Image (cartoon, rainbow, N blue to C red; front, side, top):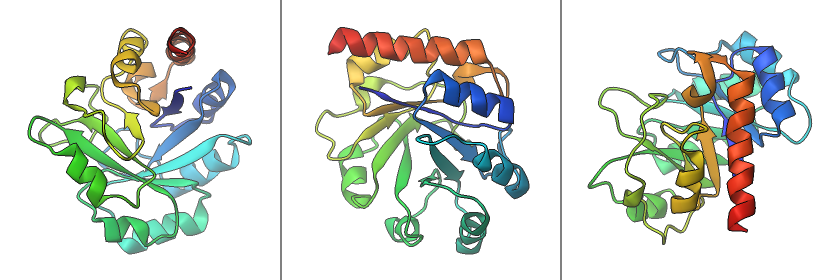
Length: 209
């Protein structure tokens, strides 16, 4: 069963659409340069509205230790997701499960990355786009993902209802992560697109089982 994370939640109605549609996790972005950035106050309100059994993931890009600790003191995050050049030592120090995002392009050794970040719960594989740290809506060549990775793969980057079944069939990831592919505009989710995306994931899971 492929798990589903919907990232970049900024509004309570979107959070409810995500939870009601059957997603396993949702992401809150703590990176000011992102159009999906939420303030600590916004995030606290959103986190309080999350129903049981939905995992809340906090996304950071090269944050300071103090900033992460400040967020954790005020917001109930279940998992941390690091999208910058954070070291394994940095990621592990907060006592929370974490995901390490890797921007994939030819020449990136994902087996070495998995070995280096062995303390992570999984590797989130996203497209490499110069000058950005994710959320680009761009996909990458899934053939670059080796089948012998020792960590669970969370597949991200340019996924939407039209290609997620093919992605799952080829990569067989532990989970898929979508943001722009289920949006009406940056940071504004579309309930119909969310439902269509999740339906595609569930259908291909049945076919492959």
